[in-house]
Image (tube, rainbow, N blue to C red; front, side):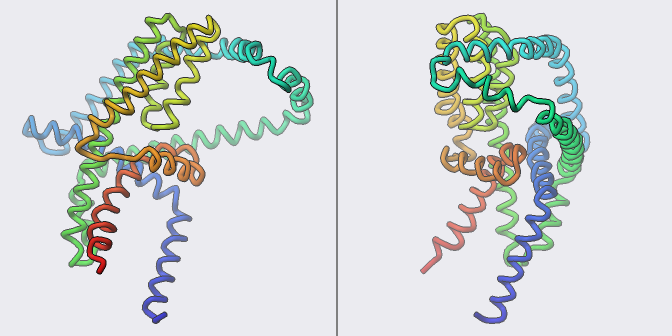
Length: 333
């Protein structure tokens, strides 16, 4: 190995270690980029319709989002809070109902006796410190979200200056390709965000309407959870189905079956018809790649890693196609 190769390898190792130490900073930065692209999509659309400069268009979009969020909050928040209160009251009933239905399974009848020693005062004392840790983590997460939102606004306010900054630290012969890569990544990420937002909104409305038609309690809350978890494909829709099924089970097993059928129809329609149609011109993620990315980043970074796994895969897929495949593998003699 030559000295130059050794130095390159050591530099790569140092960069990797530094990236790992700064992983939360990089995670916040990437989340800010995702939010900035999400803002840039309506800003660009508005500028094509109305002749506005970017700061004014961004201000209009932010104000529209704030007004729309306020109106939706005024409309849905009271009922949502009431259903959250109902959920807290229904949880014991759901647990009791599930215990009755599967009480014949060996070992479940003795579950309460097995858990009783774990609920003593000595065992519960560490719970207070754990709750304080959760509260501290929530406060830290809120600060990170605010910082991410601020960075996103700054990036969306002047994206070209940030692009020029990245190009300035790129080798001159690589700058045309780097500029194309940034444009392709922005287009793919923007298309993915727009498609998934439309898909999540439709899932929310259809699930809410379907559960309300079946007279399932907590229809609004269940529909909202199903819509939000649409952004976490493969894992999210399955987890979202548990709440309405458990609540329907309190009424009757037949209603629970109807809820399962409803969610299967909506989930498969969203996964195999709606999402491919919306994303056909932007990016096509294989379910296996999406699931492995979620599992890997979830194991490394927890819930934030799961939420940002798919946007990261969208960007990496574009980079792999343009750099690894077209620039390296296709030219390999």
